[in-house]
Image (tube, rainbow, N blue to C red; front, side, top):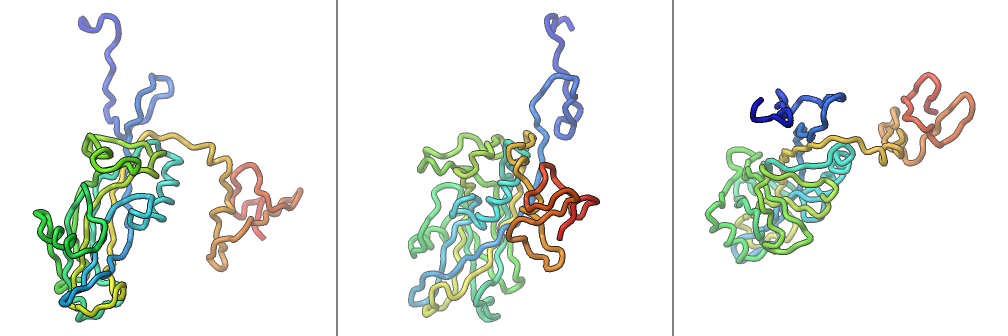
Length: 281
């Protein structure tokens, strides 16, 4: 203690990732990490053709904007996570490809898939020059569906860019494993990414007539837990309730029956479905 005469040294928590804050102690940062794995599906269509082959080009990113794969589903999941966490980061993305819309068994045998992990300036249009750029890149790989229909084509740690900037101005200063991001600013984040280029030797193929099915396995982490009471005060069971008979989402407010009064407005607390005093009609 001779080196700490004025203050008692901070004691290290035995397991900071899983231990809880002591209510009678001193507040520390909440560094407990919650890991989740989400799967997102999309398509990679054949959009262009030459005299000898048809091809397409698609960028696989994770974002709430149109630049992300299954951005609507991802946005809803992030909206739910934002009610409990303040920070997040995407740790890893694994991309798989499968024969999709319009494919026959002959198409499956003839199709090649070129993929390249690209977390920098991705090509945005399906042109022959961009296709050759992807194919000739050092990190490019080529996969076929002759042995199996579910092929892993990319495995990487994405980088988060802010859509508010452009080019190198929005490039992150630290790698993903050393940086966390504010979940409230998720609408301006785009996690790059990989580029997928399907190629098939059919020069007369109509655009968008065939496509690959692409699904991305996203590993994401959250931390800094806190409840969002601003949202919880407006959360009612009828917003997420389902009809037990038809298994369809309720279109409007659910009518609650109370011994005192009957109304379509839920009570100020979160009611239990078919509880002893509040039941569904």
